[in-house]
Each structure stands twice: as structure tokens, then as C-alpha cells.
Length: 589
Ligand code: UD2
Ligand code: MN
Image (tube, rainbow, N blue to C red):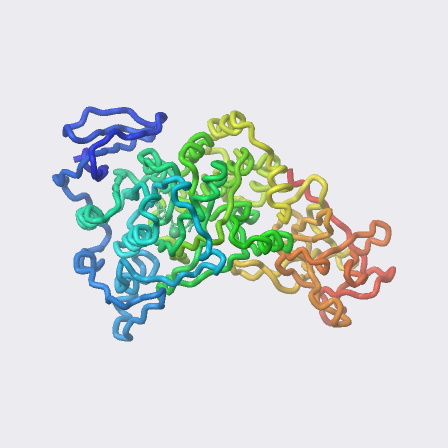
């Protein structure tokens, strides 16, 4: 019956603190449970599990045997201290069979105990910090999942229980976003009932997507802070205190851990860099970038302190519960996956808060190369993602939304189908700052066009060709030798450059025109390299001579010669045609 498709396991009957904007109460069939329909028509049942529901449709070809749940019998030493799991060569076929289910090595994950040990990956100074637990707020940990594997989901839960001070952990809330693996439901409820921390399960009948699933969890949370985790994480020693302590000082700080890597093939725990922060590219896809030299200096002055980041990855963060709601929680019109991380980042920053990374908090996450689940909704994964991103752009990007839609045909297609009036109102009501303020103050190293910078193509007059970034075909930074190609008349990302007031010639993914060998080689190659704010990436333009001068060497941008007609180099400045460049401005607003 519909009644029990959504249910929540509670450990004690009590009154629920619910956020008022969501619920229509229903008369319940059972005296010991409450039911309601939320704003999205999701039928929610809150109460004791009564165990009389009928299983729904089974997932595609997923049998209990295949997923090894009740028969889950890990090897006690596998993956201990975060070590990679060694599978036997005879297990290859089974590994392949299981891999596609979650797009990670399920066989390896199932071999590791739920309580596996991990190294303490924190820096010494972090390990020596002495948090006064009694001064910290309590936290609910909210984990949403759709068709998550038994072993990864429960290892997330166990790691939280094993490595959090009990007094800080109000509860764990698992929100099942309509998983199809019916046979896992009862074992999950039985398993969590035996745990020493209250774990509640909320199930959504319909596939609602991670934003609305997190909202379902947040409504039920009793902790002062909400801590969100993906369903395939493992937290390490001392992870929680550094997330809560900045919030104890100031409720408008939204704090993320360092996200370490749980390898998707071996489940090895790999510590990641602490000298990164989060931002995004011209497609509004989240990216990690290395900290600029100024940020590194700030970090070095106190390496245990949380540092500011322009954006969060999205899955792992702590936020004061009241602050979460006063700031408009989430855009609940966002579907399935994507965009909510930037929406929240812009909203927090532009409306008076901050997003920070606590370097003493390390949480591992299984990063995957592709998504294991379906994207219901028109247009599949692209339709869903770009409708979400179109919402982000229309609400938060001001003039840059035009730039975004010109750069992104996929998002532009969705532009007409979304309506964001309520979120625009929220932005007005909260009196939030502009996107220009955000770019200038929160992310001064950004590579977006500005009112006072050049944006467009850089044309070699004699050859009638334009500078182009190398097309690498990979999703990482497109670095390599800069080349000259036929100018494309329309907007064309690989030929679009920002030349900003600081002298950097930059393009998407934070790559800058650079000459690494400008002082060691007579005819050095001109390249596109990760922007690093060093002087060797600075240029000036002389309107009279039309020279583009490399500041550090004082030499001029030139073509490499007849033998290399598409390559660029530096030469001593001369009044010659091969050193003449013009800027073709593109109107991006
Ligand atoms: C990252 C974030 C993720 C989210 C996403 C953008 C990290 C480590 N992860 O992608 O949290 O911000 O960017 O949206 O920062 N899920 C549902 N219902 C759905 C789809 C997903 O409950 O319809 C769950 C899923 O089971 C998982 C969580 O949402 O627990 C995040 O999804 P993901 O792991 O596919 O996202 P990820 O890590 O690629
Ligand atoms: Mn994830």
C-alpha cells in the first residue's frame, strides 16, 4: 500500500520538530504513526515500522544473492587501515558483473568490514587541537541515497558512529530516495535498530532527487547543526569537531571537510591535497583549483584554521539548522542531481555567510567516473542537469547569466522551461549582494569577463588567425601549447579570452597564457598553463605598436616562424607585422 512506501523508523515516540512550510497532515491508518503530504506531493509516513508492506517492483536483475547482503561476509582484514583490497585473479568476472551496478568495485567494497580501520590522516597540529566538546553544537548527520550498495551505505553510518563524540551526534537520518532494492529495506531497518546511536530512515515513494531528499531529512532533524554526507563516505578520526567549531563561533559559516579519495576500484583510502579550494568553470561545473600564493600564505599562518572557498563540492558539509532555513534551505525545484552545490555556495556568500574548508576534518568519498542511476525527466541527464543550472544562472548570475547561456547551448535550451520567481524573491528578501561583488571579493582569481576587462578573440593581423587553446578532449584543464587557428566568427570558447586588469590572459578552467621558459630559452614556447598568479603570466598591450608584451622578459608575442605556422613564441620587440595583434571584443552581456 502507498501508506508504508514512505516510512521512518524512530526509536522513541516523540513530537517532531518540522519545518512549517511543508506539511499537509493526513489521518493515519495506524495510531502510532503520522502521515502527511508535502508540497511536492510526496507521501511521508513517520512512525514505527510495522512490517506489513508488500515489496514493490524489483530493480533490474538485482538479486539478493548478486548483491551479497544477507550473505555479506567481509574478510576481517580486508581494507584495514585504508589499504587497497586485493581480489583474486579468478574473481575478475564476478567483479565486472558487479561493477556496473554502482559504478564502483562492489566486490571489493563487500569484502571490507563495516568497521574497517583508517589511518589518522590529519596534520600533527590538527591532532593536537583540544576541542571543548561541551561548547560545540550537536549535529544530525543526514545521508540521502538512491540504490546505494549495502556495504558502502553502512560503512558510512558505522564510520560516523565510531569516530564522532557521542554527545555531539544527535542522530543519523537516512533518506532513501525510492531505491528499487526492496530486499534491502528490512535488513537495513533491522541493522540500524541495533546501533548505539538513533538512526532513522525516511523513505520517499517517488524518486525525488537529492535536494528534496535532503530537505525531507532536514525537516526531521533535531540536532542544532545539519551535517550532510553522501552515502559512500568514510569519516576519519576527529572529523566532526573541526566542522562544528567554526559554527559555534559564527552561525553563518558553512563548513566542509577535506574530501579524501576512496578509490573506486580498490577502496584504498587516499589522502588528498589540502592546498585546493572549490570553484567552477564557464559551464558552471564544479572544479578544484590550487590556492593562489596569497591564499597559501593565509593558510600557512594557521594551518588548522578553516579557510574560505568560493564554492563547495556539495555533498559534505555542516550548517546551522536555523541558518539553513533562514537562508532559504535549498531550491526545491531542483531535480535529481547537480547545481545545488553552486546554488548554495552563491546564496551563502552573496547573502552574508561564508563557505569554508576545515583542513583538520578529513572525510573519504568514492568518486565515480559515471553515474549509476537513471535521470528521470525530459531530456535525461542533460535535461535534468541543465534545468538545474539554468535556475542557478537565472537567480544568481546577474549579467553573467547571458554569458553563461551564450556559452552553453544545453542550458540555453532549458532557459524557457524554468521559472525562478520564488528564488528571485528570496534573493531580494535576503538583500543579497551582486554576482560582481562575489567575483571581485570572494574569488578574485576568477576567469570570468568583467566590465573593465577585455573579452573576446586575439587576432594575428598578418595571418588573419586567432589564438586558440589546445583542444585536449579531456575534462581536466586544457593546458598545452597555444596555437593559431582560423578565427571563428561566432562565440567560440577555445578562442575566447579574458585579458584582465592584472595583466593575465585567461580562459575557461583557469588556464593562462604563459611562457614557462621565457628566461632560459631564446625562442620559448608560448603555452596555456594553470593560472598561478606569477609574474611570468603577466602581459601588457601597446595600442600604438599593437604589441602584446610579456612583462617578465620584456619580449613580444610573435609567431614561431614559417616552419611552425601555428606555434607562438617570444622575440625581442620590433615594429614588424608578425608581432601585431588586435583584440576583437565580444559582447558577453
Ligand atoms: C557531487 C556531490 C553530491 C552532489 C552532487 C551535485 C560530493 C562528494 N558529492 O556529486 O553530494 O552535491 O555533486 O548534485 O561533494 N542521490 C539521491 N537521489 C538521486 C540522486 C542521488 O538520493 O536522485 C544521492 C546519492 O545516492 C548520493 C548523493 O545523492 O548519496 C549524491 O549523489 P552522487 O554520489 O551521485 O553525487 P557525486 O558525488 O557524483
Ligand atoms: Mn557521491
